[in-house]
Image 1: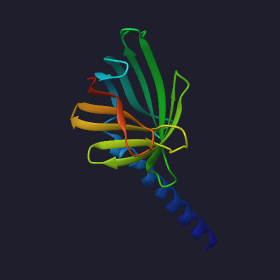
Image 2 (image 1 turned 90 degrees about the vertical axis):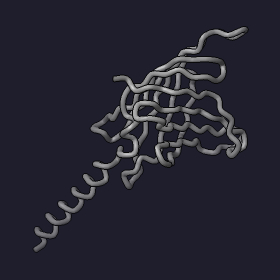
Image 3 (image 1 turned 45 degrees about the vertical axis):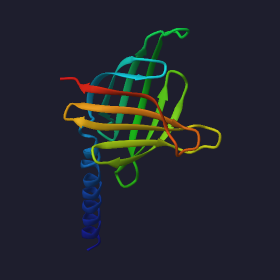
Length: 168
């Protein structure tokens, strides 16, 4: 009897774990892949690429991004590279992300979902701007990316925004 209970417990536990992981990235499916685009914002018109790819046996989602902004009057050209890791919480829902870039920034995000939109908002920390990164699916192969900043955590202003096309 005791052996049967242990076997049943193991089967239930393994089935529950699998069920949580199998649908983990369903809301991200349209964003997984390689993208290229052009955008506007400070310090000016830019071009770039980004990708979202599952890693560590699909336990996390990694985004790598590369952007180039040409020199403008009084400002040199800028190259921006970053890495973001999206990960699920204890229930298996991707609800957190951590971001690093070549300028030395680290941002911890909480994730929210709306129709065809993924919204990442940074933690509110006193005397530090709040950041919001939003991906919106416009068409099957086109996404709008908007990066915003806020001093008070409620009123956001767009810093960089652009449309990207999925690479074939």
